[in-house]
Image 1 (cartoon, rainbow over the protein chains, first blue to last red):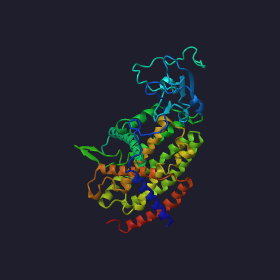
Image 2: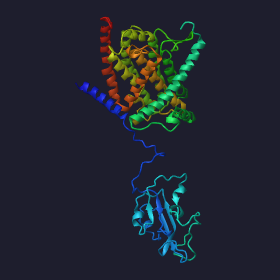
Image 3: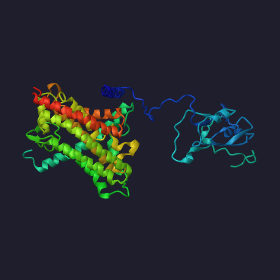
Image 4: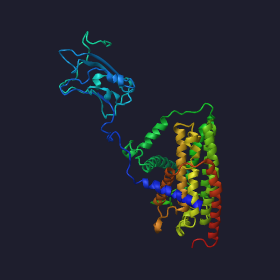
Length: 167
Length: 333
């Protein structure tokens, strides 16, 4: 009796696996086809702009303080009176993220008072060298709709503006 | 084999080896694909259309690998073992007839390299030499995992050969010959041998899985315990030789199973003999190998031995008695 039921269970095992032959595949042909990620997926960061083209970031450095992985570096400078970069008093002249350090927790997004830094659903960023994962402000900021030509040189703080002149 | 010159035999041998190698290459792809399908995946699809160039890529990779050898290894034996295993696997296939000899415009093409009157004995004798390559390979590696793997392989293959022998003898008693073509001819006269000898066939299937060291009897290369068993220290083409030998042994055993129990090249329902029937039966048999592999987990080593000696061998003996009674009592008429 015991032996017979064991043999039967072997047969049931074979039948089970055979049934799987005809089920639909679960594989997604990744590079050709992508599985949609949830709308609020936390992927690659961007620095957003206002509609008029001004940067949303006001250089408050709250994201840097909130970041548990210490992957954000922000340095602020006074807005030049004739050509304001952001609507506030100050703007970030330096904004860097180490994408290899980032844990994509979204704390920076939550800390940001102006909604400048946002995590997008994009997750397929790759590079051949480690240095390429250290991205700067120019790389992160969404393109200015008003500027058609390629962007000018990275923003430098005007002489004497702001307290931090590390650059 | 009257009037067969040595040259003709040589040419046919080369053709057979090439056929076996390509069959191995594509069976490997098919196995990966079929296992993929069982596991709701696609299997290899990237290299070439539908993954069909995968064996080419694998062969290139194997050839480009570093030919590593442990410092403590016994050089000569280490090098000879994979070659021996592969040689034995290929040699065993030499007497397997794939079908009745073909006459192509007065030109005789026998579908086996040799046709000795005791072909079955030759297959068993040569196939059991395969364990030497495996145990020598594991021994010469001077590595604990390889040694344990080869110990297991030797014990397992010796144990299961006994039960395999019981199953084969039952087919021999039934057909009254040791010549494979004559056994097939017997089955074309009556019914296929598995009908009275179903137990023998089941034992043969189980033992053929164990003899080729495949899951769930792949104790010799149990990667959970022994890294890769007897071929742990092998890389590149020597490793490939072991794998090739394993697959060619599968071909041999599936052909043997089809010839002994499934009517060989006879078609079902009285359909005429053809090579394709044998190949179809072999393909189904090989599918069974894969099916068993994806379904059952590896069994424990002591249970493997227990099952072989305390279950399969006694059942094999009883089945042999039953077949003898069947034959003496008039057989199939």
